[in-house]
Amino acid sequence: MWRQKNFPQSLGFLFVALGAITSSIAWMYYRPILALGILMGFALLDMVLYIVMPDVLVCYRCRTKHHDVDVSQHAAFDHELGEKYRQEKIRQEEAEQEQAKKGLTQVDTEGHT
Image (cartoon, rainbow, N blue to C red; front, top):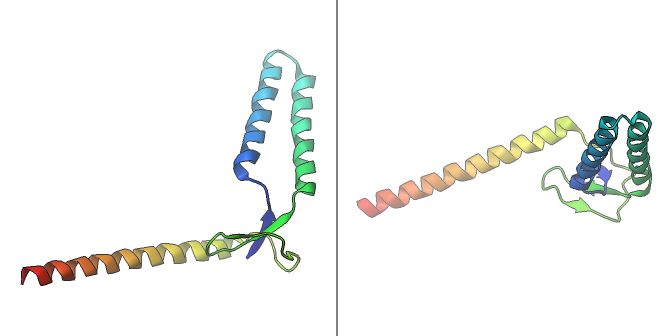
């Protein structure tokens, strides 16, 4: 399990896009102070949200989020461990597909004999 902030990634992406677009518009109208102010405002908003939002635990295997638990014993996302579980899931799905193909092949051969 790893710990992460309990904040929707899509909303975070929306904030980044909104900050980039509005500061670009201000820059287009030759308002560099306003453009930098907009970027600084979004950076401040990001910092406040980072401080305020609680942490949750997320399972590497099933991606289930666990709220209201002690997260102090868990580290942030480990890419090596995450890749291990991602590869495990891929191998499991491939094995299930192979098993389904073998099951269909047995049914076909049994039906034609």
